[in-house]
Image 1 (cartoon, rainbow, N blue to C red):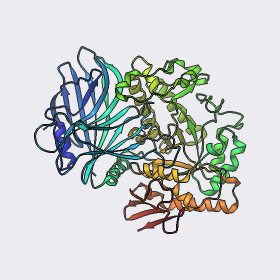
Image 2 (spheres, rainbow, N blue to C red):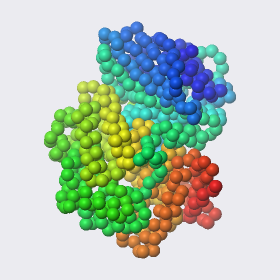
Image 3 (cartoon, helix red, strand yellow):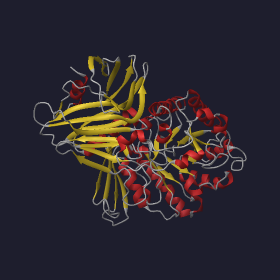
Image 4 (cartoon, rainbow, N blue to C red):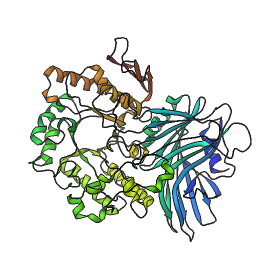
Length: 617
């Protein structure tokens, strides 16, 4: 039995069969579009899965590993390709962890690929961010795909989650890579014998532009396959359940529940200090919020020109130091958090001046023509502005990894930091492309990033890591595994838009990941506003201390109410939406957890801009 046949049989979808016809279940992609012919050496059964080795006459060797999860039929596939030969394999442009040749039987129908748009910055209603798109293959040739965008952050174009769906069942797909990934489904040009629809499914890395030299090993990123029976909501819940049980990190030994927090940015931006913040701390604590987070700008030079000045806080903003302010936060019943952008620094910052050799050496950013064959006729944006004043840290360097482990550990110990927003505002692809070995620059950076985050989660178990990338530009299984929540989008000003964003992200991720803030310049909020921000973590970033006593009580009541049902946001999710373009159309969002059901209804029988929440046992 081959690896591909064993994998497809394990998925247990009666309408899908193996159609590999001797072809390998992975691929090394080359610039001349040629592909290697591999020999499968043998299949090995293991306690929690199976593996196989493959060989090529050139001396290349590969291993694929399939980890099976006993509480479902989900499988995580990973592997590597090692050059044990004497010659360099030049012009590698991508690698597919999985290249499965499938036959969809007539009962399955023409396959569909359902994907979700990435998390840009919503600028209109309804937003395109996290919007679901379903496309069906037609007669050969036909292809549909999803991929990382052209700036190199994993979800700047599409989320790395998809459903390969047929009639009444399918396979949910997730890619664990925080750079240039792809998922591709196309008609198979080698159909083989029999009836049905021959399909090739690929998932892996695109545009990595490297040479595989003798002795080097190319990692194949983890790809998740989770079979399901039912409709698209069942497919999304297969992803949610697997992530909740096997990917999502614990927080202080317990399962993460959606949190409540205050973030200073939208209320103060850069005009803040210890003294100015204290009324906000007191009001946030009285309302029942759990974390108080200082966003960008706490360091000398402010945001953004002070990025890289991480040694000490700005003495004008914190004359008594951050530790004294953090102590005041704790006295108000909250935990203190702050912001870092670890992967970049300004050229005038202390970090860059001390360690210029830690940064990717590039003076100008040119269009990365290496990737044109992947990106087609897309327009490349001009990122030259980033080249002038900012540099990207090379997280492939052990000394860079150690610096950030030490820096955040010190903030944890000295300042009492219990929440960090790990931001990533700048696009990395141009930086990687400007290096002599773009593919290795990307791979080493992301693996180094994972090393740091893994260490922090292990050694600082009660530290919340909020992943951010100028909003939701880096949402993937890699950052899901290494973060407790996401700052999902920089749009926060329109109630209906925020609700769409939170509920769309709920289609693929547990509810703790869709963090946002209620930060409109008013205080006359209603249940409609509160519940529209309650489909994920409930944050606030406004001038609450200026509200009337009645408005403060209303906000405190909303927080108390939210805490009573927030744990249910981790359960299976379904929704009903009468008209996606109508703000006043009836919406029903339902989460089911154990024997309980949470229902949030908006624009229901009571009329437009009304909302209710019900917990049914």
